[in-house]
Length: 179
Image 1: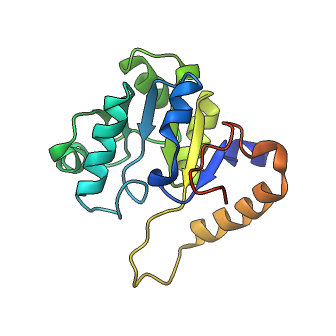
Image 2: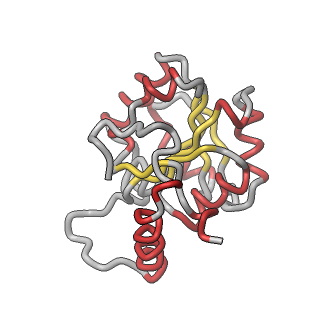
């Protein structure tokens, strides 16, 4: 039952992903969540994120943002980024994960999803048959409390860490050496 919540990989941030390894393994498209994956919830993109998108797109990756946010939020984030997007995606429903793959002109086997939540991002990707990477969610320095859902995610991640067969399914693409 929990395996639908287990990510293929678990890394600290989008900056810890070895995109060269992903490309060598045949991945050609990356679907990203926005809030708490790329930037803190509600924030605009940063220079570092803008550069990351330029870098991976120069590697010939196609990108798409899959967000439960409205179009105004997504377009504001994309101010300096050229990427496809789907807003109001209703994650974890599989419909828009599969639409994202289709919009990029790729197959599920050529696509990887990157997000910060087990119950929406990873569950939806797994149900859709798309490889995925969980990143630690971005918190402000002054944020000390986490919600009940995040507490439950932490319990599931403890089980995930004990079950080695579900870890490093992409071949340990963590540039920082793993969690």
